[in-house]
Image (cartoon, rainbow, N blue to C red):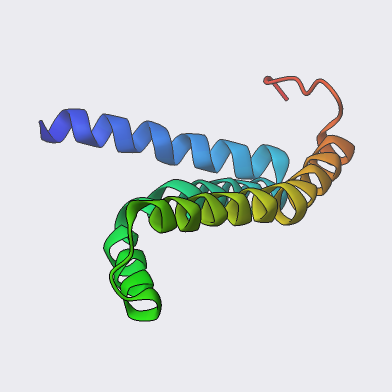
Length: 110
């Protein structure tokens, strides 16, 4: 198991090294933004579901399922707008800078 883990993490580390060497620092910031947008939507919904329900109970007392569903939908809409109007333009700008540095169709053998 240790050899398999070493090989998997070794390939991931080499992929990081090669991508940063080839595309520059912009690649790393793009990966962090993409991972951040994933964590914003999915991980926060899973980890903070109990806290969101407690917040609803604090402000609205004993809430019914309709209010929770409306709050959940509003939360999804808010995260969608954050991803679409804040994170996506930043990621597209980084892609343009990477394309300017590397070219439209970069050769993997450079």
